[in-house]
Image (cartoon, rainbow, N blue to C red; front, side, top):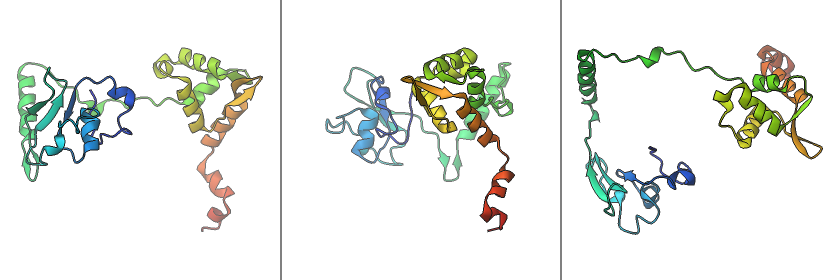
Length: 209
């Protein structure tokens, strides 16, 4: 399921829209948003969520692909949480009471440990080992073997993006794209260099400007 408040070709990739069979649109302002949510050509075909009135038609939406009909006008439950009205909290409170009465518990996700941040540069250095340079194809395979959970879905584009972010260039060697250990080491050194050294090297910082 994909939900967005900005239904444009920039926010919804074409590959995603091709695989969506159902579309739902609440009140939208123009034909671009209308067709972004319901499908190309829907506005011209008269299937228009632009006809829904903001605030007045809260909870009402236009849906396509739900049944064999060309479109549906669907009325959903709208629970107010605005303008001094809070009908959401009572619903949550009732739900929590029912859960407790059933003997179940709800895990407090706010106390969960934050996910570990993977150091891509450190992993690059690790998988390169003693090699002075490694072909990108080999490097990607080594990263996947090193940490499949992090790199298992990576493509060459993902590797290139990570290298660009880290400031590690992809070079050519005998016609092959390679990464040099020297460049990885330099990137790690520059990243981990204490901030105070940067200030000392900056004449303006030293002068207090």
